Figure (cartoon, rainbow, N blue to C red):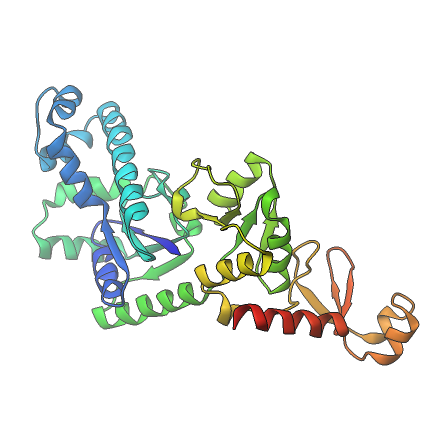
Length: 333
């Protein structure tokens, strides 16, 4: 399994330091800036076409912050190239947690391929102080900050916001807390029509799982709801490869075990915590409130009842519960 984490924020907000901390914890760090440098060096003719002559990166920065038309043309091209290269690195890489560092993740719409985005922030005074210490041209620095702040909703859109105005030790504590939270979160799934039984089972063991064979719903599931696609189709290349799990052929218990193993779900299983019909959470309900809604014998012999607030389906721990639990233990042992 591959999880992609975007790390964004203004220049000098601490993105690189954040990534260095988590790289030591085993995350794989991808620097969009470095990829951009390489692209510029390898595409001199394109740079000449946009700017009239080949320019170094610093010269490019000085021009694009003066000419919006050139800035738009250049960024459309460079963002597309960087996104393509980032996808290639992740697709060809090993399983793990990928950190994609970039100041313009939202502007480039690169957040679509990311499972989480971390936004680092600091006051402008602190950013300027750090810029001075790094020897930046302060006029250029202020222009960069201005353009990076045009997109207003970064903090609201981010999954995690880190205020980085203190020392490195404080940032390290915050970075590790976020990393642990991400690692402990349950993955979400969307199953197509070839995996309807798998969808029901994933809900039964406590995972947020929807099903659809509608392409628009699948696109929304992957890019907006950050789900993994579960399918038995062999040829499906519309989406980033790490967002698709192609279930191997075989009897059902082997198929579901492959999903559990691949996504490392064993320790996150919570049997019958979701409604297998509509995917909502189920909650315990006062026994008196369901009198007459379940068979008389069931009402007399069971003490604990649960209800799905969305579809009103009532559940209890009868023989079906223990049969399923035993069956699951045999599959995952």
